[in-house]
Length: 63
Ligand SMILES: [Zn+2]
Image (tube, rainbow, N blue to C red; front, side, top):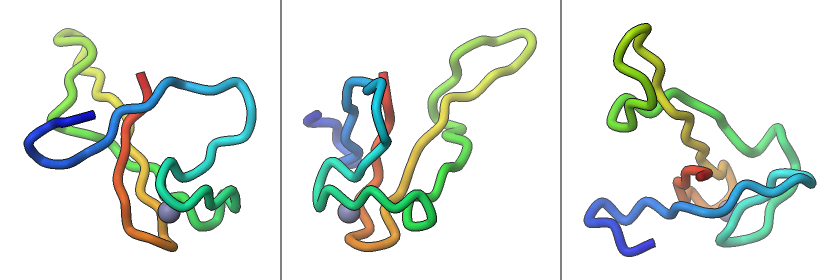
């Protein structure tokens, strides 16, 4: 939380992934993509994932 770009970071949950803003749970509404600003490993290059809610438009990462 509190990052300059406004992207949220939430704890990974064991259960169903849902939007931290509007609580949308439908996985068709939650779009997963590669977060090129979040490099997890340099070699081989591995990027983190980010998620975007198709209902409210919020973006977030999971720890
Ligand atoms: Zn949402």
